[in-house]
Length: 347
Ligand SMILES: [Zn+2]
Image 1: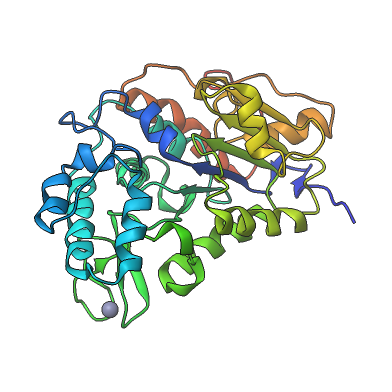
Image 2 (image 1 turned 180 degrees about the vertical axis):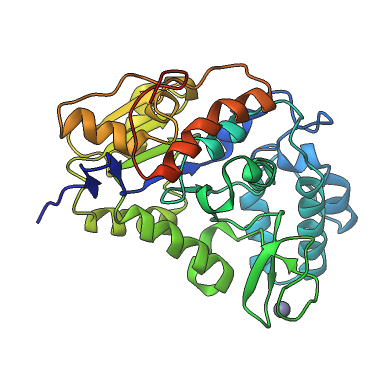
């Protein structure tokens, strides 16, 4: 039975979640010039060169000829003869991404974490620490309780785990139960046998995404193509999306610079009728048009026929100015009633 989103018309709050899924393209768009110190973001097809793994591979008497990193890694793992090399590659990759830092100015990651509420979730396939760093540096602005959930679907250099206590936290903090420092979350997976449920940490991250996707009223996909090579990821998302009883009314925004037809093809299985839009720029998305109010505004426009005025995120703000711009929205949330008025207008 199709159901309506959890819209409370007494206070204009829609409690259905907005789900944001990030892939490598999101980090590229957010940091086109690399990180704070100009470190480049590697992709699977140039990771060996960017991180400088070639000498390491050659030390083991192997020749690297420009193959895709995941395929190379997969072959090494399956051969069963290069455990030591695999360990060294893991360490080099973790070390490279672990050193990356957000620039001081506001990035798209700052806009993302400030643009959603605690009922919403941002799930990333990226190993880089940018989502975690953006979360940490903006948390004080709206308060931890009003920050969106975050999930790391392929592990992350900023997140650590304590296997004995089954807890997780920021990588360089200590486990609050046993006080030992967190160990790294596993980053690399042989591509041909990704098995998200075999690792407890990953399993819990995926469960968090699935719980939100099952009730999502808005989805924004940013720079992620749901590759057919990651069949398990597709299945985990599609299975719960199929159970989503509100999906007939929900909307998908896809941010991608690839040709539209190609993008639509990748997401065809997720798209309901024509309830989707493809943009090349984050600032053209509904999330950016109605920060912290996407699901509420969408329900008001489509179900209540009382559309709210757009409240576009201003582009090019300094981090401080962006944080100041968002504060009134977070304040209004505490009152429990959403006015739908744009920032700067009387509530
Ligand atoms: Zn512990």
